[in-house]
Image 1 (tube, rainbow, N blue to C red):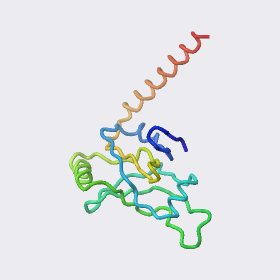
Image 2: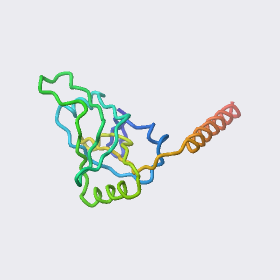
Image 3: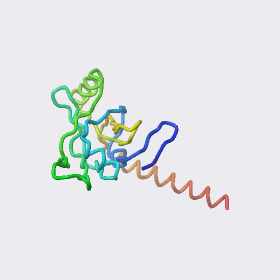
Amino acid sequence: MKKNAAEGEAVLATNRKAFFNFEILEKAEAGVSLVGSEVKSIRGGGLNFRDSYIDFRGGELFWVGAFIGPYSHSNMQNHAEDRLRRLLLHKKEILKLGGKVTERGLTLVPLRAYFKNGRVKLEIGLARGKKSHDKRETIKRRDIDRDTAQAVRERRR
């Protein structure tokens, strides 16, 4: 876990693929409704949300497809690994994000999971899918930035 001492945050996981596949338009912070064994498993590094997404159902937001492994020291009544997890936001925020998703054809993706003051938080992003030419442009820009940084390092030697 990477700690940010100024804000009291410990980053659990980031979704780097989301920044490559989507153009992030807006970000929001949401709490996650979890059971105790899930929190203990997350503290042990058992979180994977690579193919997960946020779904708007019946006026609520749900985190779908996130895998939280079973807690190793738990008994038979462990949590289900791939269950739906409700996101905790204010009603106005939920309706605003849900409206944008249904009207404009945007999607909600999880960007980052972290502990904030002992609670698991999820940074979600309102995103639009990138086209293949946009992805190629992103790769080209990343390569150019890497080459210039390398040239600067070589120049300083």
